[in-house]
Image (cartoon, rainbow, N blue to C red):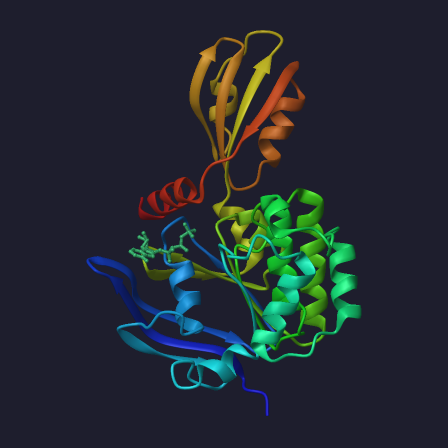
Length: 301
Ligand code: ATP
């Protein structure tokens, strides 16, 4: 019988010595759902995932994965999960095929090579390549195939598209949508807002070891914070832009160059710029922590 919740976590606490990585995490994911677990570096995402797999033990809290306690039944629970770790450790002298075989044997699964070939072809991954000759992105693809190849009930993915180029990222998003269509529950961590926006149905945000918010992906656009460096052909008056809602001037480099910051939708700025002679426009990415700082600062005001 399938459970209502594929993941049900209550009051999870984990410290590494004096570092409190998780300070009472409550989290549930419905069966068949795609949940994005968003948080800046060091927020506790990997620690939460590793507790779910019983790779590390929490000091407090309860965890139910697919209806079972992973600390009591680690092997049974893991055999129903496809896990993509943040850093995959593979034996360098093996071929990709050998590595996939090795892990499948370890889990006692019979490999469906036809399906594996479909996956590797779509990800443009050569099965005969030696692991030690693979780029970071290609190693990441091996991890993705490993997670998906046994069609698990639950996918736990730590930063799934790390190191992949934009086209491959899109292919991975498609693979995940297909897995979901077959009923797989997907829990993935990320510190990239756009990635979470692209695939998650629901987003949980963790910061400093606690869940700070739960949002719909479409609400993330309100959290987005962008910076644009604009060079004009003729001098401009900064106040023409700073009076726009959500727009502020970070720096005025010269009378023809501005660094602007936009909170939320960028539409009004684009319309204002359309009336000017713009020589160049560059967007700058902000880290999630910078976005959070601005967002929570604003909400405190
Ligand atoms: P990232 O996005 O950088 O992977 P994260 O959200 O996955 O970050 P965690 O790796 O879970 O965060 O780390 C949470 C906190 O616990 C951080 O302060 C980190 O430095 C600390 N930490 C993680 N693993 C260990 C460890 N083995 N020993 C000591 N401290 C650790």
